[in-house]
Image: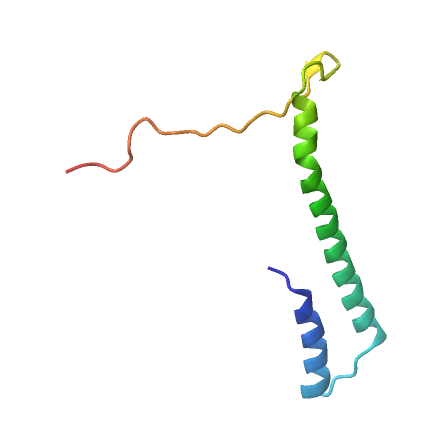
Length: 88
């Protein structure tokens, strides 16, 4: 999993251990990557919170789009009829 704190630690360790200069581009890139990640996570959280409400609204009677019901299809599980393990 991506950890934005590693970007900061790498930039600091580069400067301290390798005596590499910290440039504006490095700082700007780090800030943009971190902001992008957190904005994505913020949006994903809002989307997940709105899903149960959308599903309830879609399952209410009379909710149709162009004559088709708007209820979301439930995933089905495939169960094998026989076991793949052979008995001896």
